[in-house]
Amino acid sequence: MPELRIGAFLSGSPRLDRFLIGVHGIGLAAIGLTLLRDGLQLTTEVLLLSLVAAAAAPLVVSLGENVFLSPTFAFVMASAMSAGPVEAALTAATAGLSLGVARRKRMPFYKAAFNLTAMALSALIAGHLYRAIGGDPTRLADDTSLRAFLAALCGFYCVNTFLVASAASREHGLPVASLWVRKFHWAGVSYLAGGSVGLLTLLFLHKVGPFGFLLTFPFCALVYQSWMISAGTRCRLHGAADGSRAQPGGAGPGEFIPENR
Image (tube, rainbow, N blue to C red; front, side):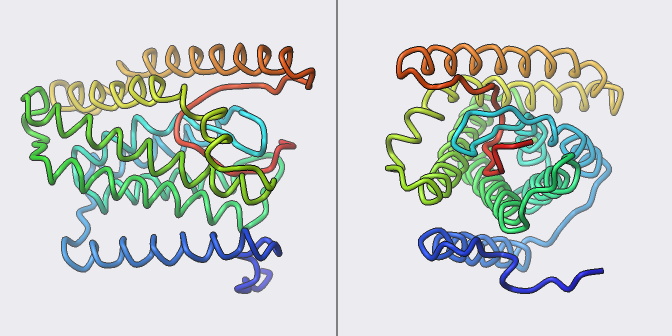
């Protein structure tokens, strides 16, 4: 097995590497402190959500500029609401690891590591927001829990898309704000749909047990296909407007991975 060196976490671009080091440092510190304070509960529900997230992670769709999206958000949100911040980070990290190793063309290690950290940090923040606002996994339909759900969803969306847009902007030398607007501002509705599927997944789990996952798969497939159609249409319109070649499209948690798949 080849030796893993510190340099494998870096891209070779000083501007991008400073950002990657900052993200890894903040992510490890935040997850470590939360783990020391709250511990980790590996329940059957968390393991099942992590397994399904890992299976869904490689189903990515391209937004151009090395920005991809993956339909794992529903299961990460379900883990955040059901178990807590650390467990949500575990589910997200499992999905990020699956994305890094399951692709036909293996991505550079620094990008796989960034995707894992960015997803885990976003999930951790979502879990903290859900708990801070009073979300209760035993009363998912309660008004307070629904407000907490929306806050956690917005937290994940803002953190995840900002981190991915920032990494891609440093790689391509583009303004992060304009890149975020072009690639992610429209995806808020998609994140809401994915989070709603996560909420539905938990409701089914609590009502009928693990069999509830089977009932949510058609909804996941519909959301994923609608994301692909929406992003594909936007990319074609963007290509027609600026004369560039249209990119394939889609949506879920943001990823920073090579354009050639």
